[in-house]
Image 1 (tube, rainbow, N blue to C red):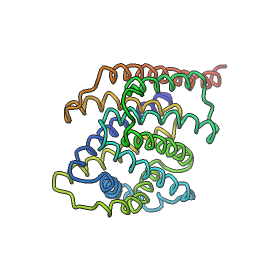
Image 2 (image 1 turned 60 degrees about the horizontal axis):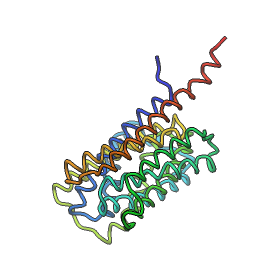
Image 3 (image 1 turned 135 degrees about the vertical axis):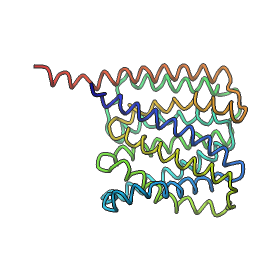
Length: 295
């Protein structure tokens, strides 16, 4: 039996989140030598090299598009999000940066309804809000002062949500791989400008982290874009939450960042909300098919 589009999109998003979690780890490792702005540049530049075999295999014709303006807008939003998000990862604990990025579903849900005209069901809204409440359990707002790193993480979440809406429109007509290759091609010169102000050549070990983060980021974006092509924004966005327990474990093992009990409690709430959304959307996706195939 073929999996429903909702379940296939869910599997792709889970894979994308694993790769994005790995990318965050490599960013932190590379930041031991390089400024975050330079890491953003190398993430995009090396991704171009990684994607070249695909371009050569399919030919330049595979990159033909009538949506260059929208692709450019996506690049501006995404490189701005990367500059903010990569910097945040160097200033605050990985688990905190990850938890703050979970505000993106709220921005994306409102944007999907207002800009894309998607139908957002009450149960889905409730589940996303519950997931957001889980991130608040992790953060415990009011207990500690809001830091510049935290503000940058929130800005990153907002910009990523806007990027998400643009990607959804693009995937209606563009191939997922084309969207990714245009992203890195356009973002590389954009990211070079701020990188030049803090430039230094990477050491051998840093090159390893840079290639690793570019590979993980490219794989994550391909899976992410494919998921967006077969599912609604608000249907796949909650899977962002999976990154929290992954990052918590990595931060503990590599950087001695011990997650608090609030991190695990909030993570449990987030997982519950995500599981409920998966169940409800899988059921909803099958209902029209059942009606059409019934005699």
